[in-house]
Image 1 (cartoon, rainbow, N blue to C red):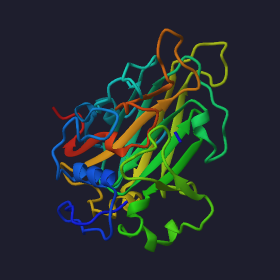
Image 2: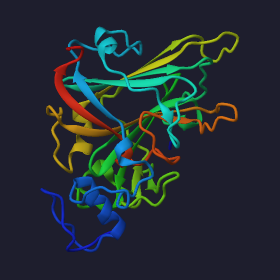
Image 3: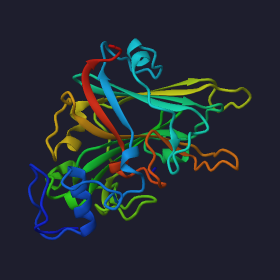
Image 4: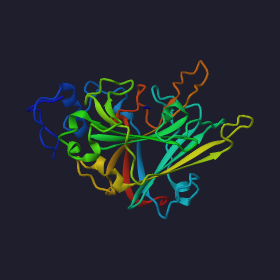
Length: 314
């Protein structure tokens, strides 16, 4: 799926910003850093804060081969998410979709299990609009930027890197050549269905390729052949920690994470069909719903806590 103020206070360890932020941005910043208690009156996002999903990612105990099959012992032992739910209303999706995470000192690993009776895909060119196929998606957020990844059953991928406009200068992105705003593929972005985000607009880098990214898909069935009934497909990703440095830069978070560190990540699935009425299926499902047709709300992403405990240990 594809403001400023003065004298309001800052989060611990943050430098005060010059100028005047909008009231909405100030509110979002204070909520994000815990400087203001959350109530139903102060929470400015369309899904309840107490219903945001949480997950503990544990360390892999052996090497992970990126082949899309998710058949290593560590994947079998990893805790899977609940069944993905309707992105808007939170109702269970018509097909079972789940995700899980593993990690080690070098990389983050992401797996998806996608039930699909008729596996289909059409797009084969990298960075084609994969959201126009049936796909699964991953978003990873830092404090002032976030990364979007999409993949279809052919294994074709789409990537974008987004930076919050108000943080572009203060967080140091403006000083980095790879975030030159004059390059091709860079343009403004203001969300999809939630276009009044308290932090304002973003800068999107559609020219972004995650360094060292490894991806694989395995189809349990016959793709684009509806004469039989398929079981589904699985997706496996490896993202080197060093490649997440642009997300970690603003608050200098540790890479790899320390025990107990938390990142915000979003896991979703989008289909080109919907369950028949009277079901109210929007065609998009997520691990943690958003209450609106928009994946681009990092405050609603799943809270992923990293544990140094090996996966599978009771």
